Length: 117
Ligand code: 5GP
Image 1 (cartoon, rainbow, N blue to C red):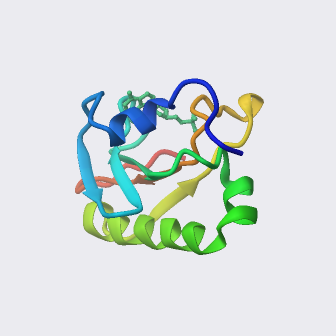
Image 2: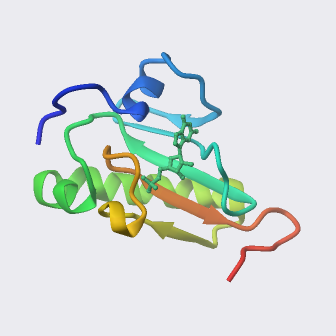
């Protein structure tokens, strides 16, 4: 589904219209710290294209990009959280999705542990 009306907040982060604590970027992917962290390490991994609203659309439309997203999440979890992490995709408002530009949450413990149940 093409991005229709306004660009998502994540597209605006890619365009540097909104500041973010960016921890990784390449041609296709960007990752930054969640503004409202739910764990000692809470990163968002985001394909730069705003074409896909959620993980199901991404899986159907570009499975290679989904695989790259998952690989990027693992790489970042190794770098920031010792390699053990939760990978979460919210799909739909009632599941808590608020930004309709596909993204993965990477939740990990910090150096002192403490990833909540
Ligand atoms: P969702 O609930 O859609 O799965 O996740 C959206 C996430 O984006 C939330 O965890 C929220 O805290 C985060 N978020 C929303 N706006 C911003 C922003 O402007 N900057 C950053 N870094 N994170 C944001």
